[in-house]
Image (cartoon, rainbow, N blue to C red; front, side, top):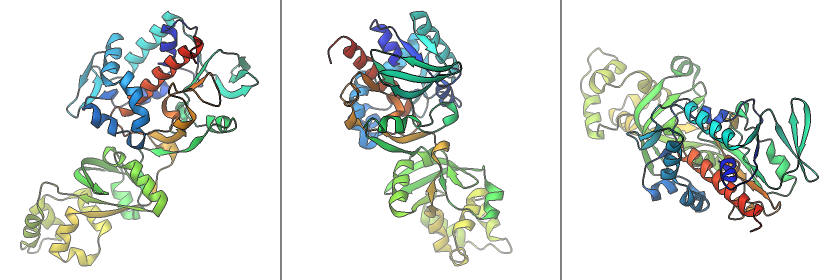
Length: 388
């Protein structure tokens, strides 16, 4: 987006990418259906950026969700709003949009260089490692959009962090965002239920309740419901060593009704059969109860019902950054001016996930990345025009 913006302003643009082809992480984002943005009201949308909404707000004011949809449709990609408010291309795929975008850039004159890994600067020149050896480039203005630290095989390995830090740029350490967490399952539970979805539950953490689903993994839990809380869970674990969430396994049943059903005579049936018969509680949800509760709780209908409505689950650690959907941390906004230019390196701009912000999944990541690319491109044009 920075390249497109610079090109539209009359600049000659060379685009360098570490990978063999452009937009690989964009394609990854569209693997399950490209969630471009979200159609919720502006204030709610901004709140998704947490502590950084003040910094992200001017970027989105200049290029927000509606602008992004119009831009996609200008590439011939029609979008629609799903039942959750998420916005997708009509074809649900990233590849057609990326192909159209790259074709438009090439036709407009962007020079694209793949398999070029940026190593930093040597004097006033940019230094790249390329298939045919070292490449040096002198540019009038530079936009860095180097990504965070997750999914490094698609290009974003965080190798730029020490390069900028050595230049005195303040960089917050990269951390996993939209990530899973370790729980420490028993071998029995792990071997039986890893990969199983836990559907239609309410997660309670720090006074906030959300309904959704997640997945049991070999080491713990992951999935959309978990990702929505991952930033605060990660920070809590960092400060206290663990975080205890509570799960309502039967959000559509009130506690008194649960007690009544559990107390109903079960005859010769096992408790598991009784819970399945009276409550429809079975499979992984029953196994979660077995995993988390002691025998005394199972013997007491009141305590068991309370646990079904609020099952404690202790999260021990976030999964590694490499596995996360996105990353937190990056270049501090205080190191940048309002145009996203580095104070310490005039003429060098930063955009995308390498900036110190994070957001949940739902279109918020792509929207802010693209908006920041546009802002950096506009800032770079101003610098070239001598307005800096």
